[in-house]
Length: 281
Image (tube, rainbow, N blue to C red):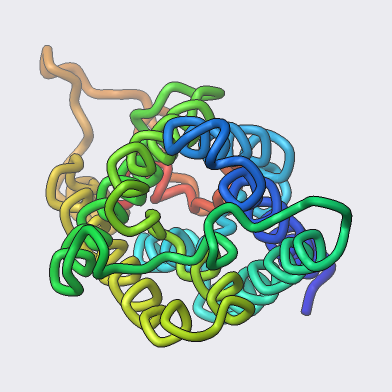
């Protein structure tokens, strides 16, 4: 593992642990006081802060579904994605362990959710309904991430859009199934809650990943087609490049038409290649 990847993996572990401890913790320790709306904003604000804090290090995925979307968009390799997934699930478990510790004997701290903030269905929404809900909410969330980190996005505002998107999906989902859209966030609390929460967690592992795939497909279909390097070379072979007036372009300008191949990161830290910056879609 390279030093850069190692730092990214550690950042993903820490970020996911903080998301679970702080955002899920807002529900565990205070949902009776701040309500579902307060919890939704807790998720959005935590992710907003983390996006700017660790985004330049790892891209601040802290969500296996987001990593799946970035992988499909060729923003990272399969090996990098695998390391991210391990770190994210481990971070989710670590964050949930801290919540379990906090509610196990520190004064009058009690679990106001009754299941350590685990996701579930049955009381308000059926299993099929929860599955469809999680696919749709994750689709919206991951699609926003892919769009605001794309070539047409406004630099510097991706974190704000992503945090608001997470808040919005939680406002809808919390009253229905608690809102997952993040398999790592769901697995950690379910392991410590056990019982029905653990029996139902499979849905919150599978549905968000499907939502991420749908998001990639839709975003790719809606985005501007990529002018590939091969297409540019074919055009050059056909004859000199000309501008709209028919004037021949200088050789240096013709060369500048080929997308740069160098790898870099966008404003949120997500890896992109030169061709991707011109429009990977």
